[in-house]
Amino acid sequence: MDLRYKYLDDIKDITDCPPTSCTNKNMTAFRFIFEPNTENDWKNFLPPKKISPQRPLRTDKVKCSGYGLSFFDSENNAKMFYETMRERNDNIHKSIGTHLAKVSIDQNDGVVTKIDNKGHFDLHEYENTNWSNKFEIVAVLYNPR
Image (cartoon, rainbow, N blue to C red):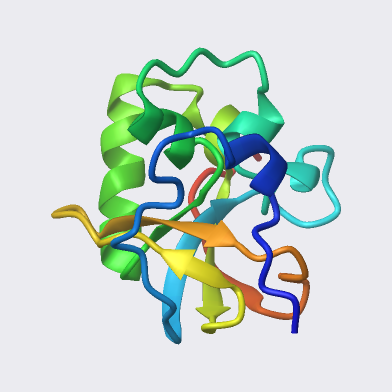
């Protein structure tokens, strides 16, 4: 199996990216996504810097995170974060997603950063990672209907 990072060409000049503290894990995680088969679903498993390449990121740590996929360690932590973001930005659903997916991560998908005090972590994917059969929607977070 090829364990080359998916965005190696983008991260190779960023200091300590992915961080040396990252580890491979088998775990269940939660990620904000757009409803499949809608106009924004192409963003579901792309890191922020690939969605918005012009996005200015100042430090190497933040630049590195921009090439990682954002996850949470529990459904509750993800929902709490989403609500906090929605209080600050009524249109957050347009940028981070409308649904919450439960995702099965295994050690061959990439390396994960340490989980922070809000339950958030980044995953730096390996080149051949395929998410298509590794997630299921567990909650609708925003429904305009």
